[in-house]
Length: 130
Image (tube, rainbow, N blue to C red):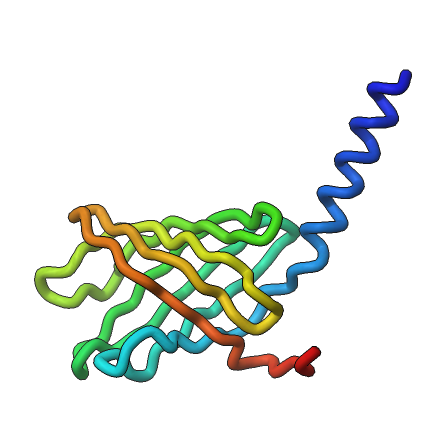
């Protein structure tokens, strides 16, 4: 019986941690000056995320979309590129740490073996700073 109570408590605590993160909205990519007009739209459903990402690299547009999951203070999602920059990868993964309610900081990994830093700040809706 104690095991059942422990499992229920663990599930409840896990749900409470997940509920603390509300990533819904528009996030601005603040990674590099070569990137302009870069926005990530996140739709969150419990611990699942669905993303669309628009960016321009030196004036050339790129669009990617994907889905993933939130675990504790991290979000990870796989992306597929629907409008590619010539020579760039068409698939990848973003692994981000939720550093506060307004910043996502982490790495991208693509199917060509490239990796790099990636950072987003909340753009809309704007939230109060704590």
